[in-house]
Image 1 (cartoon, rainbow, N blue to C red):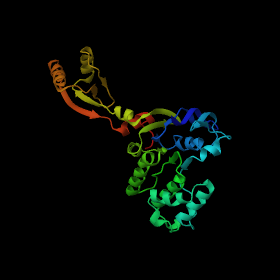
Image 2: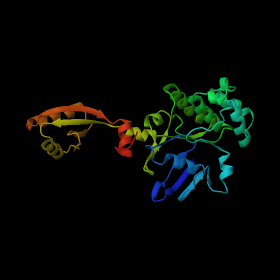
Image 3: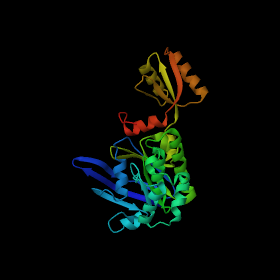
Image 4: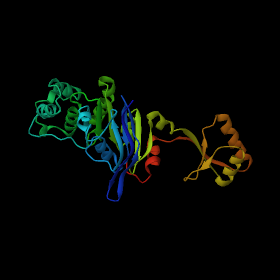
Amino acid sequence: MNVIETRDLCKQYGAALRVAHLNLNVPEGSVYGFLGPNGAGKSTTLKMLLGLVRPTAGSIQVMGKPMDAHNRLETLRQVGSLIESPSYYGHLTGEENLRIVQTLRGAPVKSIREALEIVRLDGQRGKKVAHYSLGMKQRLGLAAALLGYPRLLILDEPTNGLDPAGIQEMRQLIRELPDRFGMTVVVSSHLLSEIDQMADTVAIIREGALVFQDKLEALHSRSRHHLALRTADNPAALALLRARGVDCREDEADYLILPLLPDSQTAQLTAFLAENRLGVVRLEERQKSLEDIFLELTGKAASL
């Protein structure tokens, strides 16, 4: 079952189509990474999923029901969210802030203590939030989203502004949620390295359009090993190798790109080139990094 499904989801502001015909499928019980460069339309999409922004076109289903005026409040009782930066009252303690959210959501009183324990703020419950560090405020925002153990948790850039220790702690918390509480988590980021350490399913958008959606393993499979070859005359070598039935192409850095071959076959090819007076200048094994793949999918000029 998909907890979230969108069909041809669009959002237009004036002449700009910020979200373009998105078809998202978020499997139940997954950590779903929603990736894209800054300004790609991630926050706008998440706001539409929560009913905070009205779509220009298309449909949204959350937990099997349309996200519309009739179902919105009932659906949102089962959804927790942290969009952009957390909201809080600085003059109140962390526990007092959560009590306000608990009252509004109608969650059990005991869920305040439990949420603070989950995000490891139980020792700071009596401290005023104005004196919290940025990382503690982010964790308080996550605690507010966790009140009542929602079936679906939507987090927009939850590691923004955190130090390395805070980022690691937030990642670990997010990874644990599906197994511990049966939640489905949608987490957005502009950093592939973050999503790679949290998610099992990934969607990537570019300028509001979906360019990839699949299991994380499918993204890793694009990072296949290959051979990079440079010769004294690449065009002549390319023609000879293709005539021999070798799948190869020339890249922008003046290398011939070949599939990864067994050592014996690689040795035969280099000997074949030498016999045809084409000296091998350089031969190396390469593998695309996930960041390279992300740049290919989102455009080399995109900001990481």
